[in-house]
Image 1: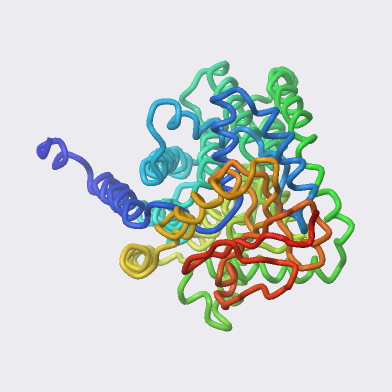
Image 2 (image 1 turned 120 degrees about the vertical axis):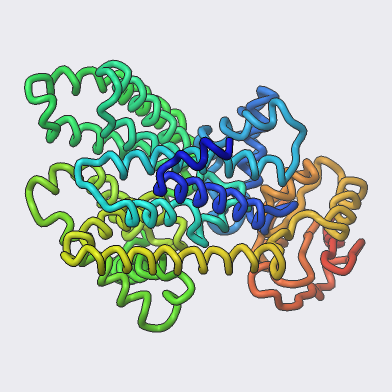
Length: 482
């Protein structure tokens, strides 16, 4: 084995070191439990419902819960792709927070291999050092490492997108094998996230501009139709569970669009530097620089044609998140940032003609990224534990809830989908006293410190009796009901 390793080229050795560093980094960040949230709870609930065959019951319950909750908690059900992925673990292994996160992280690293082959075999060639840097962005960037500790669809969705573009540009497969692999990747992406079906546009643009299929474009287009119809059919099934997001479209205005545009351009720049990117000027400055080199890489019609399917994917997704009235963190950019940085690196490599200087700059960027990743791994391993949902006080209050609250009664809590998963009680979210007392909820369950800002809070309404509490939680019951 050692002899085989010695026989590898220097570039392959560095790739192996990078993969090992990414794997260990993910293990460093993975902890028991989970941060506060509701998305991961619904994903787990859907995975369990799939295995038990009661997804329809879960949909009915969650529809009722969301319709009686304040604000937009989330869809009634998420697309089934990520829950189906989780069933691969839950079907064969007992549930373990650490185990299921490692399972997800290993799959993501394997998906990174597809991204590497896409970049390294692309017609626009990059030096080995820059390929290593682009791959490092995908595998060990602090934001990516952070997601190793979350049961969210982001990493699995990235895997499906990496696979789609790798198979789309691959030349080593037969025509029918490639068609099947691209189609399956499209279906997986569409089943995982709402925007996955946008890859249809990338596929059709690839067929349109691909020089190797000049005489067979109509045939290739027709052969893609069955996969497209499958995707659209699944979208039709999913749409019935997404209706509580539609009302947000009425809040779109030019002010939110401009705010989102500047926010996401700044976040793109911050992603490159990350820790330094949060200084007042650096995020905006590097966002401008990155977008300049992105444009420079596409300086010719030939380049535009080569990257056209990827540009379509980037452009439509970026337009959607800019238009969407609720601004989010970098996770909205995750499906497109690896491709933006890749193309920007191509532009930078074209710009710097001095190859020796170019090589040294790439080494500096790689070392800086490794230092950032190491700092994040150390922070998450030794100084910060994101787990808020599982622990002695949490287990205590969940047990008391199950004993003291009848199954037919309703509990108000800020994270109703998680509380339902933990206790199997009927839960809704209420954000004010007036909303709570106008709701069907009889019990109000609160964290003693605000989930979002950590401030101490306590309810002092005479219509509420404190019936149980510990250091972190308090359970109230209404006394104004007959």
